[in-house]
Length: 259
Image (cartoon, rainbow, N blue to C red; front, top):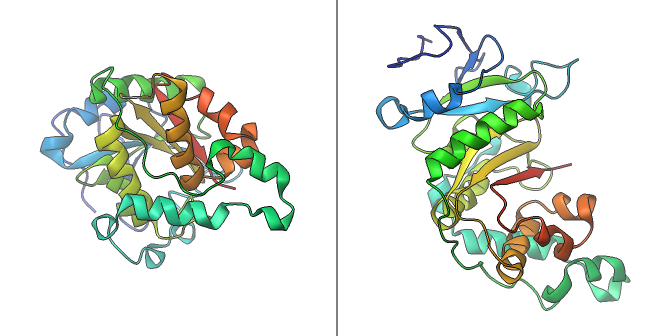
């Protein structure tokens, strides 16, 4: 696997191929501004930059250098094969509590949506340039130290949403093991909310958001999509859609974690 062809290389050639050849990984931790430099070249290089985190300090190779953690055989489709509303509605149904099961607390957690999947949320209004917002969030994620043994990856991919499928990332596997379906929803969020994929670790995902909800009602609609996409954010996080929605108002970053 030859070295990535870049116009400007912030690593000064410090790249290593992953064992499966699906991505290049920086030899050392990324510095502020690296993501921006590589993202600005994406249209010409076809290489999407992705901040990478490991499972733990004891397992720095997982998942990006460990092919057993990324299973291309599970990806049975392509992102364009699906409709995002149908995917989200199906996931919602799979985690929706039922009153007859005595799950009163879970029923309360989904607030006004007890009648079922409410459908896709309204489109957001851009508050920033999506690329500029993504570069800012990439630097924020790095500065906050949220990623264990951070590295910068380069993936041959036409867009950030597809980079996770192209890298055979399977972080949400306990919820959805066909990553192409995850990418399908992310494509839609790129269009509706100015989302960009900036970072991923073993089972976490970080997205910049250039068109976030600006009021509580819109945030609640989007919270329903997030609950379908990643129920652990609510069920093992704040506990209710209302509390979760409040955290989305004018938020420039969405993060997800699957148990």
